[in-house]
Image (cartoon, rainbow, N blue to C red; front, side):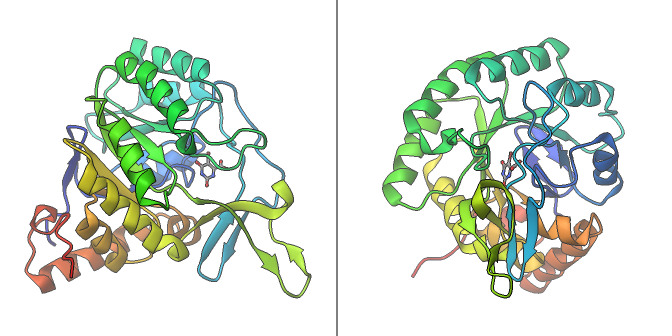
Length: 311
Ligand code: RRO
């Protein structure tokens, strides 16, 4: 095998692959499946201050080239994940990331204060990009709001942390977002991308939308968003100083994982393919990526990270 190890926010991962928050990570049983898999790390479902049921079902549907979801932030409440993080065996297990998605800045402050008081070696990923809570626009598209949130949360967290971003589609937006992120020294990584928000899937036979919440509107994931994901990874890789990018979107095989690293990713998360295939996906994609690297003569991720050539 080629060397697939990486370091994120100063934490060493035995390999670059792990789950995208939201998949296989809501309950302790889900998280144990991630621990038992060949992933290099694991991340919890985005937590809110209180437990949430989420939106009515059907709220996730696989499509021919990806998926659509409007889960609505179902989670056990932050205290559940804090308890999990407190009892996690950091010595003998892979690193743990915890995703937080407060419905207000005050909720994020309260959750972060609780994690800080516990003084744990887990890494926080603050989710600025859930597209599916009715009546709550995502902060990732509100640059002033995101800057204000970071100005409060970054000093509070103190240590290295990351943020989960929505996809951006305009060069001006990459520039504005990067100029904000570069102001915060302990913002160690950005995770690009969350699902492409508010797509619509329609069944031609029934002439019905395919998921129930929000009249069928939901976040798109899987192979159909690969090129949007690669663009966001590369755009931020080029613009961010002393920060890392975690790539997510469209990874179905070692090939797409390789492309994410070539675009600049230091780690790669898997969402839709994990949901459809189960945790065995990590062993498969590790092997496929290693085979590609060996065929190309690359020994480690550093040999080709961010080295995509332009014409
Ligand atoms: O729970 C969700 O509906 C959800 C979240 Br929090 C997110 O960040 N991204 C997504 O596609 N779904």
